[in-house]
Structures are given as C-alpha cells and as structure tokens.
Length: 212
Ligand code: UDP
Ligand code: MG
Image: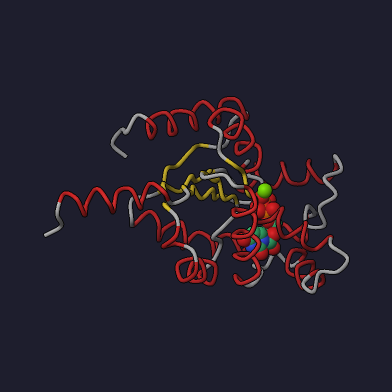
C-alpha cells in the first residue's frame, strides 16, 4: 500500500516533470499551423521534429546533414537517436515546462527510442491527432511548395513517399496511443480557425480536469 505521504511525494515528482503533448497527423494536416495557435493561446512551447531536423541539416558542421536531407527527400524517418537528442536538447535549452512535440513519434523506432530514453522523465498528457483526407493534405503541401515553402519535400514525388510512410509507419503509432486512451482526434479538413475551435475545446476540457 502507498502511504498518503508517499503518494503526495510521487504526485510532486510527477508535477515537476515537463508536460508533453504529441501532435500527429498526415503531412499537410495542419500540425504546424495549429501548434502556433496553441502556443499563442495556451503558452506551450512548440518543438517540431521536422523543423529541428531541418535546422540541424542547415548547420555547415553537422555530421548528420546529408543523412537528414536524404531521409527527408525520401519521406523516410530519421533514426531516433538523432531526433530524440535534438528534442531533448531543445527542451533543456528552453527552460520551459510544457511542450508540443509536433511530428513525433512517427514510427516504431521513434516510439521505442523515446520510451527507452525520455518517456519516464516527462508527463505525456495526450496525443493530438489531426485527421484530414489525403487529397486535402496533398493540395495544401503542393500549395505550400508553390508559395515558396523552400522545403525539398513539398513536391509530388516526395509527397507520395511521405504518405506511404505515414500510412504504414505512423498510423500504427497513433493506434498504439489510441489503445492507451491517449488520442484526442480533431477534424482538420476545415479552415484553420474552425479547426482551432475544436482544438481549444480539447485544451479547455483538459485544463478543467474534464474526463478525458
Ligand atoms: N522527420 C523525421 N523524424 C521526425 C520528424 C520528421 O525523420 O521525427 C522527417 C521525415 O523525413 C519527414 C520530414 O522530416 O517526412 C518532414 O517532417 P515534418 O513534420 O516537417 O512534415 P509535416 O508532416 O509537418 O509536413
Ligand atoms: Mg510540420
């Protein structure tokens, strides 16, 4: 039996851990757009795994630059050791205590690496899942590419690969968290403001301690 004192202690320990929300969804589902709105409204720190990898790739002295670029263009998932260490150091450097981790974990290797190295040190609140049909997502990514996103993977060839990876590797991860009752699904096939109305409900409900 756990004594009241011990339980309070464990509670405190738990409170001291940084809070994490994973944000998942197909390429172009709107993860980055919505994360920015969540930051503005609810004060989380946004860490996009893809952005961190692109930043690392851009460093002239990075030993992983070429590897990252080839994985990104091929729509493949970079080995977890690289992504996890970028995420961990960004978390530490920020000095913040609540994070949106966007676009991670995306496959079994990501999940295992995270569970082994980081999971016990953070408090995973839930997984926000943006659900959006493939056609809409492709249109958004191609639009983003045409508008000058500068991303080497916003083209039809990379997009097909990214979608294959999403379906075969990321969807099982969403299922893994669904089985643990951690997934909050949002219909992302409407305008950014309409989607955010749904997102707000999830956060407000969570902050109110709603059943969840
Ligand atoms: N990526 C990765 N591991 C991650 C996140 C991203 O390897 O944890 C790579 C992967 O190749 C992916 C690309 O970065 O296709 C772009 O990811 P991002 O999340 O920026 O794209 P989005 O899904 O938001 O369009
Ligand atoms: Mg993104």
